[in-house]
Length: 98
Image (cartoon, rainbow, N blue to C red; front, side, top):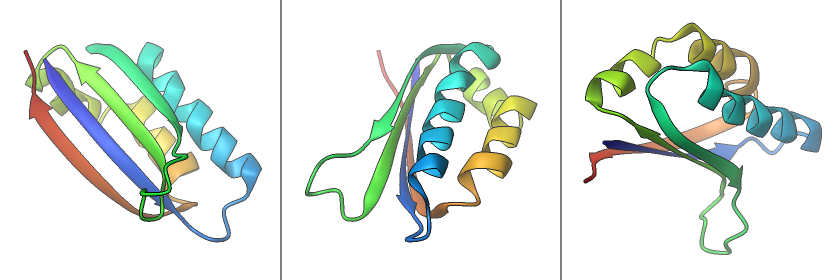
C-alpha cells in the first residue's frame, strides 16, 4: 500500500466557507477515485503546524492507484475548483507501507 500525505498552507484571504468547501471536496475523493483504501482530511489544530492549516492522508492500494489518482478528473476538478483558489503552498510525502 501507499500512503499519500499532503499539508496545505492557506492564503490569508481564504474564508471559512472556502475552507469548509475544500475539506468536503477532498473528502469526497474517497468515493470518486478507484484504488483509494482510506482517506482522512481535516483542519490542523496543532500549534506546531508552521502555517499548514489542512492535512490530507490518502491510502492507496498500490503505486499504480496513486499514479492514476493524480490525473483523475475528480482529483483535477477538486484541485482546480477548491484547492488552488485558497492554497498558498503545500507539501507532499508519498511512501510505501506494509
